[in-house]
Amino acid sequence: MKIAIEPLAPELEAAIRAKLAANPFIKFVGITAPQLGQGYARFLLPFKPELANTIGLMQGGVIAALADEAVAYALYSLVADGETFNTVEMKINFLGAVKEGEVTAEAHIAKRGRTISLGEFEVRQAGRLVAKGLCTYIHLTDRQKK
Image (cartoon, rainbow, N blue to C red):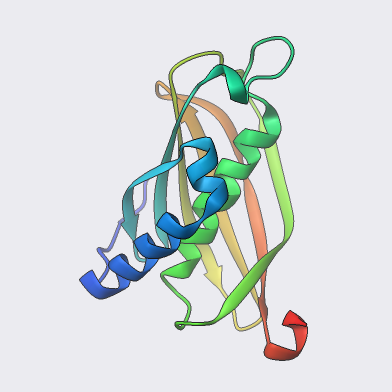
């Protein structure tokens, strides 16, 4: 995935990193975010036995969750403070297995809409493409949050 990455304003990056630090799932599985940009995020997740399925490979749902989180945090850089959104659809193609090492999810927002936004992602392990897909998010109004 080759895209130009625009840096975030320091205050915006700090706010997004505060959301990351407060996210229980991200802390639980051990995701880190070495790079955030305007409509962009790169997340890392080291393989560990607790994230494996019965045959010793990283469980597909974990890979999908890593990708979903990366796309969501890419979108946070494009929404107003306090605006919320939720995943409504995810399409993922699993292209390779992960049994060791670190997995990288790279995500960018292809379209930031008023109601619906679309993000693209690639998940790699040691440069090898293991998953690719799309996430669609709905921007929620106060009425929809209830």
